[in-house]
Image: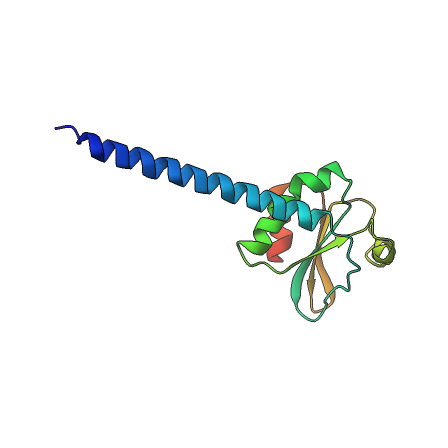
Amino acid sequence: MQPKKETKVKIIAVSCAMIFLLFIGVIGFNQHVNHELNQKNIVKIKTNDDSTVLFYRDDCKSCRSIFSYAVMKKDLFRKNIQFVNTNQPQNRHYITEYKLTKVPTFIHLKYGKQVEKYTGTNIEKIDQVIKGD
């Protein structure tokens, strides 16, 4: 027995609405990521807790490729991630302080002490640093 015509129409309407909402959500998330990426705030790294710091440059292609993943981890999975744009002149002291040679670099800190460090775009290794394993 086939569903009635009005049931098919309802299924199609609900499906279209869900696709539209998903599309709007993706656009909103992308705008949020771009806003975060282009921030040139002066950052004071919080060292009194367990957190991960992402050092990046807003003009770095590799940084851009993983930035949305880091924002998703912070926003959706509630990971404590601090973002430091090293293109901000007043954030550049972190380059020598944390011995940064390239970006993107993730550093996991536990109460001010460096636990783990990774430079690159490998998602599995980024996850390890964020978890502090």
